[in-house]
Length: 338
Image (cartoon, rainbow, N blue to C red; front, side, top):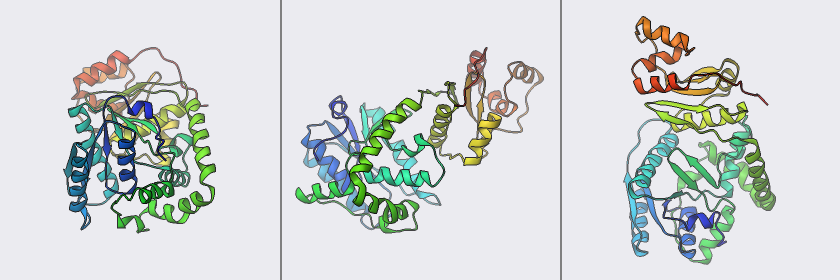
């Protein structure tokens, strides 16, 4: 299983590997070495298990033994929704390292079983093709370009590689706890499916990813002073997918009913924190700040530009965003809904 996805890209510049010390990231660490890829590693210690400190120390020892840098971030997260907050915490850490040290790519060790688990979970939530393929071999997250070199290999292949090379790794005991949704899907559905239909599932993901490339247009959201804005694509489906990605990067998930509201009304307030506004030519995502006092002149300027009243509270205190909105407003082309 020495073959890695996007190997030509991996040989460009220098990469940062998100390293947990588990089976997948340990296998990827050694496969990168085998392929002479230049990289360092980053590890996050959440202090959630008795072995957490040992895992962090082991990551440092492994990196130093191969003359690599190991960056460790230590944090303790309180409250509910730990998985989401942990994800946001580690990606903030990764983004900081990428910018500070000039890494070209962030590497994660997601593999085929992870992809199938995600797809099954999204299928049961009523998602479309782009969401079903949420874990991709090459992806972008704001300032990051993410590569997942193991995405064509399944868990059984990875564990066999580790055994054959006598490589040690840590086991996260929480992976067997079926109180977590992902674990239930893993043990009850994805693992049996992979054992019986692994080769066909691998092919299906390849075909689906090719089909998805023809379905989605490129939508580039830019940012100014808390305002996110993008020129509308031809198809509403492409726009909805990118809106969802921006909101997720802000720690917000749109419900199915909110998505339908947005499609119909072209305006939706999500979690009472952000507003999404689909104008004729541009789409805007802004913090939602209700009950703001504004003078008559500002209100009249907004009315003439046909700016949604729910956007105006944010724009009052954001002169750069206000100037951007004024610059972008113009004669427009409606979205197609096919």
